[in-house]
Length: 116
Image (cartoon, rainbow, N blue to C red):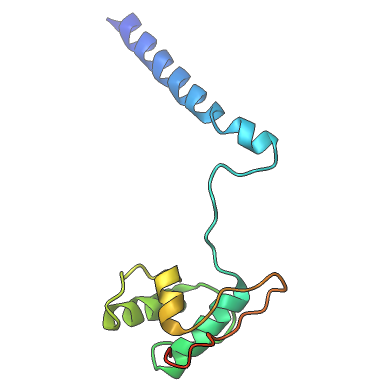
């Protein structure tokens, strides 16, 4: 009975090891196997300013997606009938009237005067 458990344990470890190797080719070519959707600091700063202007955020405008920023985002999302993720997702960015940073790292407000 003990040998069966060892074989199962060995098999499980082998499967996990093999599954881990599946991402190696992407890493070998300098690509990540997942895509990052992390907003730039300047996009976060723009969002923080909008949230502050609307009374949701009371911290420093520092571009950090910290606890206060996430809480402000959740409150804003709730009031505006958005998914309450606490993240700066595309729907929230659009609703706030902030555009994502361009290649120079600068963020700008939406040109649409009807957006906040």
